[in-house]
Length: 158
Length: 211
Image 1: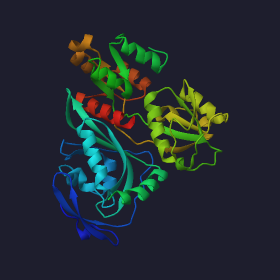
Image 2: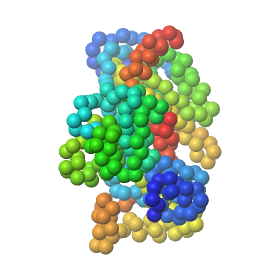
Image 3: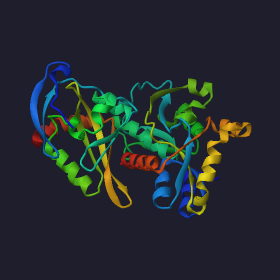
Image 4: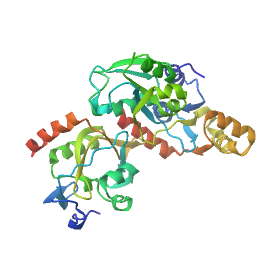
């Protein structure tokens, strides 16, 4: 379940855009220029079903995303999708993990309040008895150099 | 008992182990290739790492470390992995650091105190156990808060029919004085059960972090 973003949740001036997400989902998002720095030493961890529906989140995920656990469990992982992320990045992610391979990239994630945070993300298929049953996504603190490269590169990928 | 992590890993590969207190790296091989199952883990404990420098080092933030930094660490693969992840914000990786591998966390501290290393990666628990005098001469830059990575007591395929029995004995260790004494010497209050799903989750996590 995923809803359009609510202007009452947004902190600061915001822009509005409608995004086409994975699995034919459309969502109106509201986003600001407010960045939340990634905390040192922490990992954001989540697991999803094969269709990207969130089944587990850790406390760092809850704190950084701004959503409650109840809002996250059962929602598509694309609840974090920011307008500045090129669709090609997520197509590459899905193409990679559905083949059973590991994907890694730098991602600008959207917060519930409209702000954002950058992560270095790794997504791996969960293989049980030879079958992929879901995915685990682990995010860690990215270097500012890599983030700046992405800030320059991603707008050229639309 | 084995002298180092490599010797222990070799023993696992050669099927010379039936019961093991395994780190998360070895757990992957034990569960997926060797038919081991988890028994218990130390209650409320997780494996965490600390990045520390000599107290006189002027660096305040990991992100300010530069290529060529001399980094001391032990051959514990979990701790090294967690430490290297915390150095990524400085664009440091195996290709642009100078590695100094030691056999113990005390020797990591010694390398920092003697100026042979710029940065030390410690098992957090081992850092906490350093003497007050040594800790006063060091400064922690960052400590991991991963919480999902831990050692586990595991049982091999030859003993699987005794799994429940051994698990029960371990879980009840803190109910007698002798057991409490052993646990205390190990540094924790008791064991808690580890399910296979939890181990699989941790193995996936470590797999993701190893990239």
